Each structure stands twice: as structure tokens, then as C-alpha cells.
Length: 188
Image (cartoon, rainbow, N blue to C red):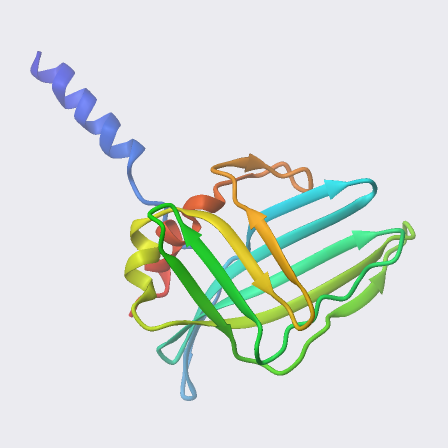
């Protein structure tokens, strides 16, 4: 009986073990410290020959935590430019009802348009967003249910899934718990 209980305990600990942090950059030099997690897909929309992807990564630059956002739009038809400016924001609605606001910290950016060898136009737009004071605790304790991105001239809503398998790379993503799983990687 003891062995059965021990086995059950070990299995349950293994199930709830935290994943190690994966960094794309982790540098400390004479100028300071910079670390950034690998990009993680939060949303994927594929419809009528058009694909949209939203990727997040968390960074810590000399003690300042930020969210790096990368939007990728892919289509053979016209792609509307969604620009970030100084007034752009990301609103994250948590399952517990709280709304977390992230503020854009860069100048205007409407992305870069690239054409691939298959005739698709690809627009890549990036932005860096700051956390508001005291938002870490809320993001670590509750999953995200919705995300709203306020662009220069438009607003777009995303309903985040608990889990999905990407059509782009066949990887399973869990966007609802992204911050719960990843914030620990950039905490001081």
C-alpha cells in the first residue's frame, strides 16, 4: 500500500511540475542584462486563404519586464496594415473578471510587407508593451479568456483557447495559461 501511495504521489508531482524556461536570448554584459523567452503562439486564424498569427515573448531589460508582440498576416490578396502607435494597448481579460492593460512603448510601426516564393504577401508587425504596476500577480494567478489589441485606427478581439494545435507547425499551444507558465522566467 505504501508503494502505491508513493507511486501516486510521484506521478502527481510529475504532472504538475513546471516546465523549465526557454530563452531565445539571455545575456549579461557590461551594458546590463537582457533576457527574452522564445516566441509563443497565442492565436491562429486561417480562413479563405488568409492566415493571421499572434506571437508573444516576455523580456526583461535591466529590470524592466515587457511583452514583445509579433503579428504575422499572410495572404495572396490585399493585407490591411494594423499599426501600433504610442496610444496602442493590449487588454487581457482574465477568467476571474480582471482586465490587465499593457501599454505600447515604441513609436509608430505599421510592419514590413514581404512577398514569399509562393506568391503570398506577408506583413510582419512588431511591438513592445509594458506591464502596468501590480499586474504580475493577477496574470500569475488567473488564465486569460480574451485579448483585445487597440491599433492606431482599429481594434481587434481574440478569444483565447485553452489549447490548440497549430496548423502552421503542428505544435500544441496553451494560450490561456501563457502568463501563468512564463512570467516566472523574467521575474528578478
